[in-house]
Image (cartoon, rainbow, N blue to C red; front, top):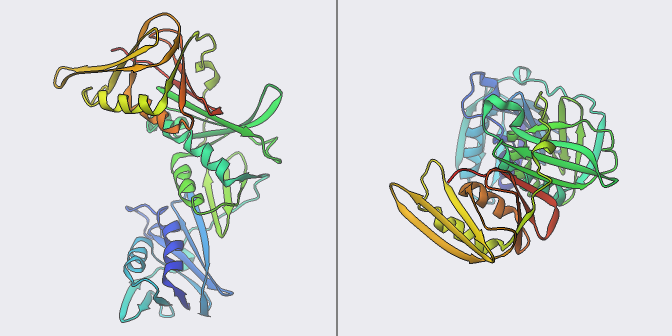
Length: 371
């Protein structure tokens, strides 16, 4: 294999694929990126066996072939080369790749392409397209609530499924860690009517979110019961799905909450952030005391002391005190696009619903805590 490629184009493509590669690998070939040159393009593939990414870029190919090279080392080399330089890659010698740019020359050990795991791309029956901005919303409004608790592996991703709301078919995304729940929905795309409910793993969600930031077209989604594939631009991201049953999340969304609290989200978020400085690192508890149109935020800890802040709010209900994890409140507040957040509560021990005044499609549920 021999080719010449512009440094910034190679760097961008390498950045896409190398982040999939785990830093520590017991299988040497999984530390490498598969490089395939031909027909004026360089295609790069990386995998961790669960998640595979393929990206391609234009190159001047003198000799078409394929080889694998250490992903992170190659990325670091290209990242440190002078901007605007042309990079020459020569892998015609067995077991070795030479990289030249200007006066710099690097030699890397390579492994044969035959050792690289086959992509195993199968026919995925369900295919539909989603606008990039819609997919960003799906991810951003839900991923913060994904559980990191490995024992409940079925909560380690976003549950994506088709459902019906008031006779309208929607594509709905849900994530929960047992303490909070995030739900977002959009009109069901054509072709998604018969899709199975799938759980997209956290790593796949995070890699996809980074990649689609650079695109403004449509994400083509293909899926089966066990695999999902996202295609956009020159990039294809394929992933196994989490093999598990997502819990019946509808049961934890309360329907009888009758106390309505409307507040200015940014003012509230800043106040929570200030008051929580005092709360203990372990509990992060902040108490909300609401009476009439006044909300009092407070936090106390044996080590740090206490903090109190008062806010003007619009409240319809009897006076009550309720406690929340401040981190969870701030995570939800970051997703609120409108000026106001709407809290619907029942009592100090029951789940609270939080909604965005500017986005009806988003809904959050937060479990209270004792304070």
